[in-house]
Length: 155
Image (cartoon, rainbow, N blue to C red; front, side, top):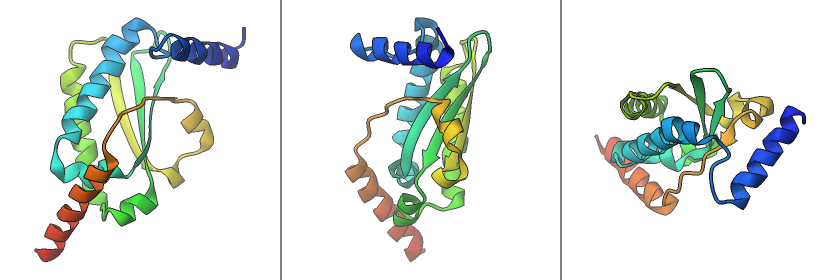
């Protein structure tokens, strides 16, 4: 069976049985630490605008390799609406790296976050990452982001 067909089969079986399309080891050592890191970073108000601008979160993992790529794509129009600066994105990346290092410290895998605007990444790169769903209340995030932007403007 070709790799694309195996990927389709993994996705089908994962959705059919209500679980991730990754082996249990990857779920424990990579996916769950990512989810915990995202939740911890999400709890910080100063990154609300950045989180409200996320369009895609995906994971690329290759069997036999200890490196995993976490792709986080931001929508430029949402960044503008939420007044997310490059400094805000840098803060998000810093916090995410810190939390990933914390939650994955006992694992066998290195998770490297790659945060980009949608316009900077090709379709091949996006399709090479399995989407990880991370539920956030975008309305609350946008309200927090608006308050943060107003506070920065008043300074």
